[in-house]
Image 1 (tube, rainbow, N blue to C red):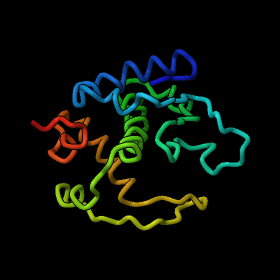
Image 2: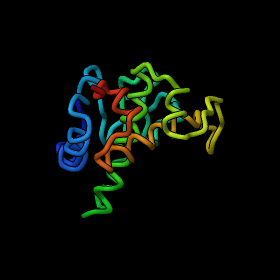
Image 3: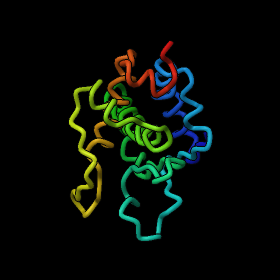
Image 4: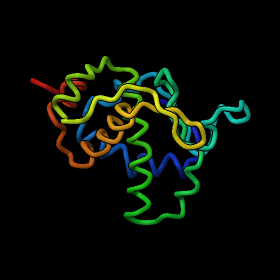
Length: 160
C-alpha cells in the first residue's frame, strides 16, 4: 500500500482509520498490496472523469482517490474522525469486492441484503451497482463494530 498526499492527511489515515481496520482484519494489508491511496490529490485530474471531484476507487481496485479530504480537515474530534473513517473504509470496501472473489449470492444470504447487481445511474450521471455500494457500506459497519460477521471473516480468510 502506497499513500500519496500531504503528511497531515496521511497522519489522519494512520491515526483515525488504519488502527480500526487492523483490529478487525489483521491481514487487511494483503488486500492493499498493490494499492495506491491518494489523499487530497487526484492523479486523474483534468482527464474529464466524472469521479474527479468525488472519492472513488478505480475499476481494478488498485487506486483509492479521496480528492476533497481537505473539506474534512476542519472537522475536529469525533465528527471529523467519523467522516474520514467512513469515506476511506467505504472505498476500502470497493477494493475488497473488486480484488476478492466475492460469492454475491452467499453474501446476500448471510447478510440478508437484497442482491441487486444491475447498473443504475445516480446524480450527475454517476453509475453505480447497489450491491457494491451496500457491500462497501457494510465493510465500514463491520469494522466499526469490531466484530466481523461470518461472510466477511470468510472473505478475509479469518474463518477457522
